[in-house]
Image (cartoon, rainbow, N blue to C red; front, top):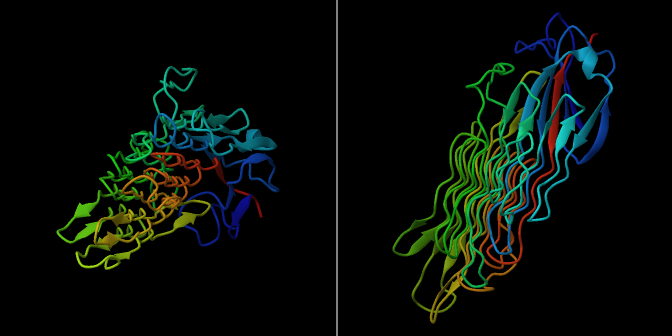
Amino acid sequence: MARFITQTGGSGGAAGDPYGPYNRVDMFKDEGSYTWNPDNLDTSVPVRVYVWGAGGAGGSSSYAYGGGGGGLAIKEIAASSALNTSITVGSRGTNMSNRAASSSFGSHCSAHGGWGGNTSGSGSAGSNNYSGNIGEGGWGIGGDINLKGGEGGSGGYNSGSGYGGGGGSAPGPGFSMAGPVPLKAGFFRNGYRGGNCTSHGSGGGGGIGGEGGYGQPYAGGGGGGSAGPGEPRTNMSTSMVGGCGGPGILGAGGSGANSRLTFSSYGGGMSDNAESGQGTAIIEPNRLVFGGGGGGGGTILATYSSWYVPVGTPGCGGPGAGGGGMGNYSGSTGAYLPSGPGGMLGGGGGASAYMMGGFGGNAGGGGGSGYQYHGYGGEGLVIIQYKVTE
């Protein structure tokens, strides 16, 4: 467990904190079971709880879709009822054909994990309206606000030209720089889909502010950011550039890798690696902002008779953003290279054949792989905002 504590005091929140009524925030980000029993809890102020399910694993057998993001339930609970509550943080999705584990705050609310990118057919509808689609996101259950995780991007399974979809993002906690977001419709959004792709390409992971970028041949799409979608790759006459990451609330998305072609002798090409997304997260008693940019998409070694393009690795997503995807030229060329991981709540970048799908950040879906090496989803997440007495 990671706990962030500010100074207490005054009739509202922390001393010098004008943003709201709370003066403590706890974050549980590692899978497992816990008991929440803080000292000196002020029972006159309701507790606000955010519960995210774990992210589903990407697919890499029969299908290569990205994994679905975990759902989110947000609830305000009478403080006296919240004491001594058991907390479960769901384990990350590793099986591409199953749903990742749920998270919960006692019986008050819970959130289902996302489904793996190789799951197809009819699932159990239950109380979360699951339809059984590939890489479906999870749902929040029992909250004042219940949101759905983003779906994994589409992919295709083939040992030569396979292409992997980006992992879906989890929903964000709502956005405000000036205090807790009102628990009303219109202030919250479901998670975003991971990037789709085509042969030899890979989609970027979804971010809480936009979809992952489309993965075109031999390059990866940029990861979605906390404030906008990722971009697809671009082609120039002598260059191939991976997609740029989507913008962040608190930082820019990363530039895509730039592989410059030469037509002289073998070994004449050059490449820059993609940039990771910038930005940070604000996790305070009265403010939750996941403000990172998406990771840039990578480009891949392409060999021909007299020249080659060296590998440009993808970038990582910042908080709330997806990782960049990674393409491939043919078969096992450049094998085992990983795609960019997502930041907290962001999906992992997809990967082409023989590449490794990026892991999702907490509650984000893992990237699919066009052949063999899928990415895992992220563990669940629970954040609690509350007030204690002096």
